[in-house]
View 1: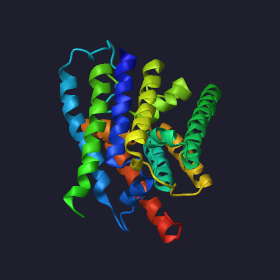
View 2: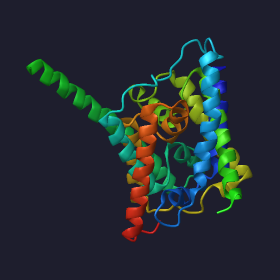
View 3: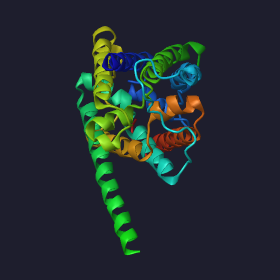
View 4: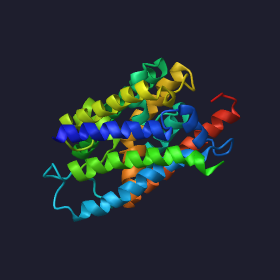
Length: 149
Length: 145
């Protein structure tokens, strides 16, 4: 049941990206080209999504538990803003502005088998793996320096 | 710019919101695609939650893509905006950056902003601004978009 619900959510999500125009990188780059021939239409995708989710969060607060799950895996809303968050957002934003794909549209567009999409998703995989490796070294370094200190 | 230009994007956004609401109300999870995708690659890099559910969500994304390809192929582009090496670099930055920043357009931009999470508002403002600067710089440098 959990897998079925998750599958349906993924399917509806993909349809929303398609209907919304998010699968057209030229359109995305036009949205980001605020100093040029700006096309603000894609702001509507975020607005529509936020409108539905604003209601969903209110409903969620009244639920004793999720409908088909006993535990909740939602991050703490009020964690502090830190440098890591902002640095990651800058790096992601540069990648988004370079290729016109954020993660969802890139994955959905795999079905086209376009070489550019395959290259993008391959890059995403390398990026995630690089993050895991870098984090492991960083944690080891912190532990070593703590032991030294 | 007519209001009609916003109809498709808003309709698509409502569907995205419904999908995210199914994840939240049904499964108690954030529909953060970068986290779900990363969780499949490396469990410690993704959002908390079980991997079978993640796999089903990504399967749903691909199934939705196939439906679109069958009934509305025009939602996909005829050609990519940039060369292959640039697309690979873009993907690398998207993959690395969304892990460092704990989220992307879906997790921060839709799910986080809609609950007024300060981190998500800051992240969304930052990645949109960084994307705008990148597109502007590329255009000024004469790199066709």
